[in-house]
Structures are given as structure tokens and as C-alpha cells.
Image (cartoon, rainbow, N blue to C red; front, side, top):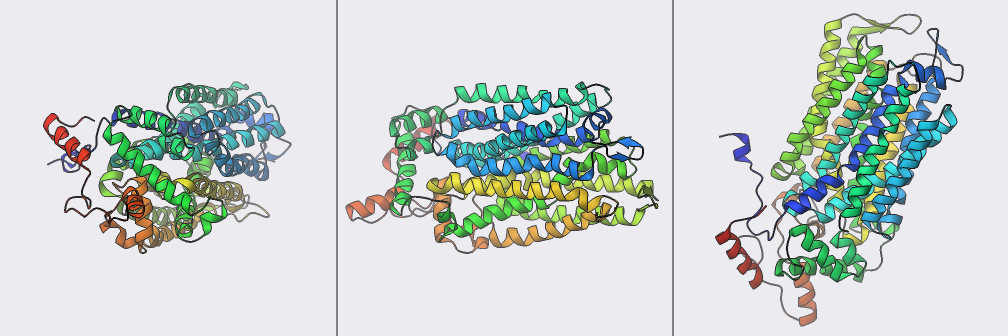
Length: 551
């Protein structure tokens, strides 16, 4: 029996209506990840282009050629991450006030402003300004896309839909590598302007698409527009807005939100109080550790690192690693909603840990430096093996920690805290992204004031991957197959992450609300799903069984 038959992706028979509209919408919104991936990926190749180095050099010379200094290189790479950090923190101002949909549209125009500055720049100050504004737009987008996806996706395939955002990021990285490789030999401004200006195409596609898509029903409920929420959810499920299944889901979302609001309005400080503290630290820790695994060292400085390691065709190697990043994400998306969040993250951390350790050992023991700091390769075969284990590391990252960091952080917050909680987890990702981008030249380069770690830096990534293993075991809850409202209940009832896998909901927020208002008891449990379903749901299940299940 094939693996696909053992773990098929099938819509549960109790799910009413059709899921393909929500899946298609979530997949399209994930396209915003192309902006993220392409913008972060293209700079690695641009920094290695001869024409760009001659054009933007302020007089720094290395090996007889004009270049930007390590400090300038650090600023160019890291300022995008600084912009994304502030953009992520600002995302609730858009997401909670004008909506998830319009927030994404405005964010994309901010990104476009940064692209304009970078395209027309002929010196570092304007180029740096463009990097910052593009980063600010990417930061907004990177917080709002998982928010939009989580609030529109069916629970049975939510992990794959939100994980598709990471898949789009990997496609963006691959496209950046391809464009950089295609233009890097040009001896005119087209060498860097073409790869930068192409980003307008990705932005226009996202803007036009978002103008056609609905607002999320959870945001509409949050803003008190129940009728429009019914229309939106009906579109997502291909059901009339007054269908019993639509009304039932809306009632549960509203009951959950009403319960949360009865405890008071949400603020940033509330994200670090009571039961929210564990969730906030979990999300921030997960996003921070995703960066500390070392993935962006490979994609920010990979081209230059491979050149330093004696690899003559570094641009081709970068294209290969980017391709592996894309392909490896696909099995991860398939398994997220079958194997669960905890086992995927745990085994991914183990695989990354082993791979980084081997790369560190091979690089440290088979390369050296002369008195001028030039890299000497003692064993070419060992360097090839090191590249192979870099690729194995990318496989483990792309299939697990890459998509799942966005999936988990998109699930763990209640509605009233979701935009703020996600903004801070995403900002943590970008803060560590910035720190790594800024510090890496100082850590790996040769010369006074630099640590000159070279391949030894992989020992740092190895240690961080080892921390990832413990973090998953103690802090990551299993949320596979639960609605966002049930995830909220899970955190309220289960205090130990390792016991979350066996938890099942016993009541709904709507039943609690009815019990409080009517003085009755919540519905009894059933052996199948923990609840006795309402009559309209029983009738719906009978019709689904008789007429077949629509995707």
C-alpha cells in the first residue's frame, strides 16, 4: 500500500458544503509569500554582482576590486529585516481597523514604494531607504497573510493552507536565484535593476486578487457585522448564508468572541498576562528559533559562502539549494494535517541538528586560510559532501520548521488577541532575522574586528537546532483537526503540552453561553466526537452520507 493511500487527504463527512473555495482562496493569498521570499533572496546574488559592487562601492577595495565593506553589506541585508520588524508590529493597526483584506492591499503598496526606491537608486542611501520600506511592507504582509488564511481555512486542512505561505516563500527564493543567475554577468544597471523591478509583477498580482476576495468571517464578527460574516462564510463553504451549517459555525465563532470580550478588551499587555503568556512565549519562541536554525545564513550569504568554500559555480549551487527548498516543502504540506504539528517539528529539529553538526565538522576540518585570509580547501570531496548535507538540512527545514512556524502561530491565539499576538510573533521572527543578517559578516569574515568563524558558524546553528528539540517537547501543543475556537479551549484545559494530543473538546462556547443564559447543563458527550450534535447537523450528516461528500 502506498504512503498516499495510508494517509489520504479527505474532507471529513461531517463537513458541510464544499471546501475548495476556501482552499483556493488560502492558496492564492499565500502568493504574498513570493514577495517575502523573492525580496529576501535576491539580495544574496546582487551583493555578488560585479557591476553592482562597482556602482555602489564607497571606495572599499578587496583583492584589488571595488566592493562594499562588510559593515555596508551588513546594513544592506539587515535593514530589510529592521523594516519588517516594525511592519509586523504595525500590522494590527491595519488588520484590526480596516480589515485583513484591505490591510493586505495597503501593505502591498508600501512594499511597492520600497521597490521603486531600490530600482532607481544609484548610490547606497536611496538603496538602503528602498530596502527599509520594502521590508516594512513585507513585515505587514507576513503578519496579515497567516491571519487571513487561519480565519478562512477549513479546520481539516488548515495546516496545509497556512503552510502554503512558506511554500510561496520558497518559490520566491527560487525565482530570485534564477533571476540573479540570469543577469549577474551583465555589465550595466540591468544586472540588478531587472531582478528588483520584477517584484512589481508579484505585487500587482496580489493586489488585484485581494480586490476580488472576501473579508474573513471572523474579522466581520469581531467588527459586529454578522450579516456580512454569513455572506463571507457562505462563499467560503459554497452554501447559502442561512444554511444550518453556516449559522452553526457563525454562532460558535460569535460565542467564543463574546466570551473573550466579556473578560475585557485586548491590549498588547494582555498578550503577556494569565493564560495568554504561555501562548505568546510559545509563538515568539517558535518564530525566533526558526531563524536561529541558520536557514537565512544560507539564503542571505550562501552565494558568497560557497565562493569562499572553493565552489566555483556558487550561483548554480544557490539555484540548486533554492530548488530543494521548494520541492521539500511539498511533502511537509501533505503531512501537516496527517501526522500533526508536534511530531513534524520534533523530527525536523532532530534532522536539522544532525545535518548542521556534520556541515560544521566537515567545513572546519577540511578548509583553512593563508596569511591574507584567503580560503584554502584541503579536500574538495569533503566540501561537496558538506554541500550535500546543507541540502539535507534544507529538506528538514523546508518540510517542517519552515511552514509549521506560521501554522502554529496562526492557530494559538483567540480572536480578540490574534492580530496583536501574531504581530509580535512575526516581529520576533524578523528581529532575529535582522540580528543574524547584521551579525553574520562580523562573525564569518577575516580581518581586524571580525570573528573569522567561517564554517565554524555552523556549530552555532547546531546548538540552536538542539534547543529546538527541547522547545517542541515542552511547549508545542498538538492542534491538528481542531477549529480555532477549540484550540482556545485546548489551551484553557490542558496545562502540559505533551498531553495535548489526546485532548478532545467536550463542550462548545455556544453551549456554555446557552447554559449560563438558560441555567441548563451543557450537552452530553458522545463516543464519536465528544458532543451530541444539534438535530440540523445530524440531518446534514445523513444527507452527506447518502449523496456523497463534496470537496
